[in-house]
Image (cartoon, rainbow, N blue to C red; front, side, top):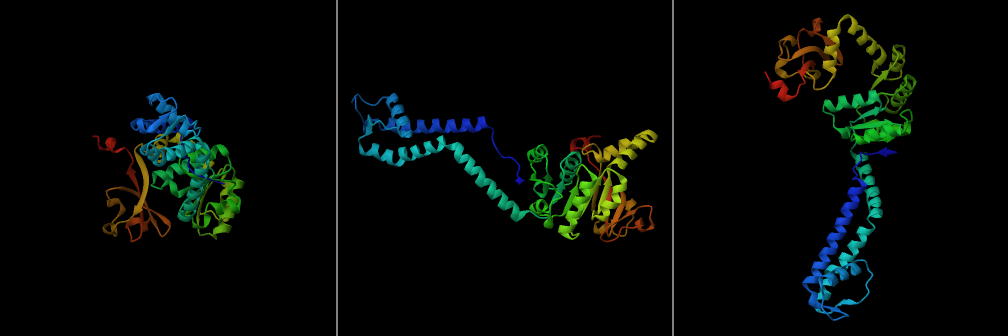
Length: 338
């Protein structure tokens, strides 16, 4: 089942809008009858008062129609034909608005699903919306990925609600199943991020993705134990991040070199000061040393391989290189302050 971001008003808001629309319609009919009150015939023959106009409007719109007040003149009958009768239909529509709203919501959801299926491509699939999955989504959004290009695959109902509340399209089911990944349009995806809670599930997801895409979609996976990383790479993952080893490494650095932890947190936390970024080398930068650039370059990516500045190959920038640098990630007002 595919879940789209919620676009609903609260029940009190919807009820209030319907009530206001019904009252406005009654008042409009009262005004029309009052302006042409001489054209109406009352059984009492004592003339139409404002209360009579309200009475006629209510019984006409509700289709009760006692017949004690009737339009007699041609103008009053014309008003009934072109205004009161359509208003009666509209009033009934407002009264049964709940049923119509359900049908409209189903129609709208069907249209959104059809449009999404036609346009979804070059997207990123997040398998698992736990702590790792949410952090991966945050990083994608910070790097400019549009929410419409992110699809979450999750079994937990609570996690699905969190994903749709965040404005993401979510698919209910296990990412280890081919049918679920097919619903996520795995064949036209740009990348798959595996952020499941267990390493065995991550391996199964990687195998399923590789089987469906023949290795054409980039797979990035996270595992808890380092010994499972080679197995994931054999299963088709292009990059494997060992969460426990990374956390342990940071814990060790916090003891031997505490300031390094602050630097790493600064690089990984958005809007704090520094952030890692990557861009294509510009034409006038080709042939120059990375150390000569205005930005702080820490590495080059050449034909899919990372080249550090300590390598002889990293002495000059070549055509097609990607430049990995540290950018100022502070808010503009703070960055501009002396």
